[in-house]
Length: 231
Image (cartoon, rainbow, N blue to C red):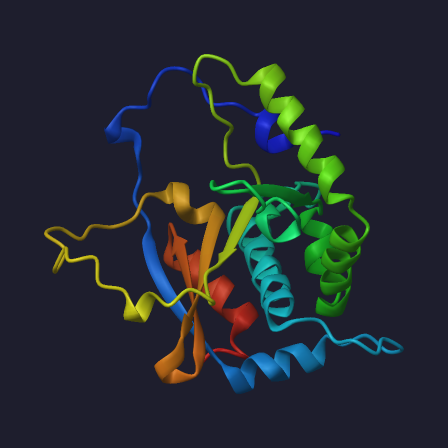
């Protein structure tokens, strides 16, 4: 199987810190009511089981990132913006006798034209069909083979495409690591513009999405895509 996350490897030399351009982090809040409205809007006719809130939100965010790359960054419509979906293999039979992490990234391919020209329900269906039609263990074995064959001398893969990590089930609001207040807070690296983090907000009955933009134009274009559901 082709694994773009592994085939596109980093160079051995480290980039200079002066070349790390900075972006601006933005938080968008989606209430549970808005998430349910979003979930209902993408339910396909004839399907008894609706998609999850997470899949519906990921599809919406994916379209937002695609519009930014097409309309603001000026990338061609044929440009690929694959979605890297983290899968926890420990919940799929890897947990017995294994104490480490078991995360692998599975790719859902799409072009900017495909994401921008089709309705949101099409994007949701694409995600679901890709994941449901995939043999997870075969893909994991293929990925391990790729790593064994290609990753040498500490080389690691680039973050290719778009990664969305959902942390809504983790109780961050109850965590105290004993570090106290941060000693320094700065603008995030633009390396994070190809990823976003979805976190739960129990007190507000909402989910927060943390995104990094490199310009006000990117922020405005992205917000226009999701404006109907944020608060």
